[in-house]
Image (cartoon, rainbow, N blue to C red):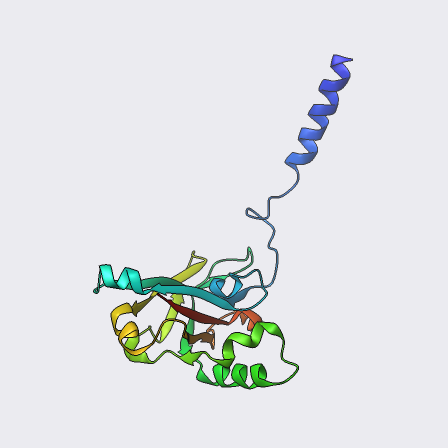
Length: 189
C-alpha cells in the first residue's frame, strides 16, 4: 500500500511539474489601466471618502490631510511603461448633480445634491501626468488638503467633492468604469 501511495504521489508531482505558472510562462487577461481608489467601496460607487475634523485642526492648525491617488496596471502581460493624464473633471460633477436631482435618482447619487467642488487653492496641485515605469504595476501621487484653509471657508456638515480622472493612456486600454475617483470630503466638528 505504501508503495502504491508513493507511486501516485510521484506521478502527481511529475504531472504538476509540467504545468506552467502564469507568472512564469503564460499570459492572462487584457491589460487595463485604472484607479484603485475608485474601487474602495467594493464597486458600489467610485467614491474615496475622507473626513476632516475641526477638533484635529484646532489641536494642530498646520495639519494637512494626505491621501494616495494613483493608477494600476492589470494582467500578467509584460509590464511596460505607460503614462496617463490626470485631470479634475468638473463635467462629471455637473452630470452627477443633475442625476442626483432627478426624482428617480439612485440613492448612491444623493451626496451630489449638496456637495460642492473643492476649489484648487485648498489642495496642492496634482501632477498633469502619472507614469507607470517598465516592470512596475502602479504609480502614485499624494493629494494634500489644507485643513485650516478648508475650515476657514467651509462649515461642519458640508461635503466637498473633487472628481479626479485619468485619461489618454499612452499604451493599453483604460478601464472606463474605474477611471474616475470622486474624492468625497466630509467636514465634521
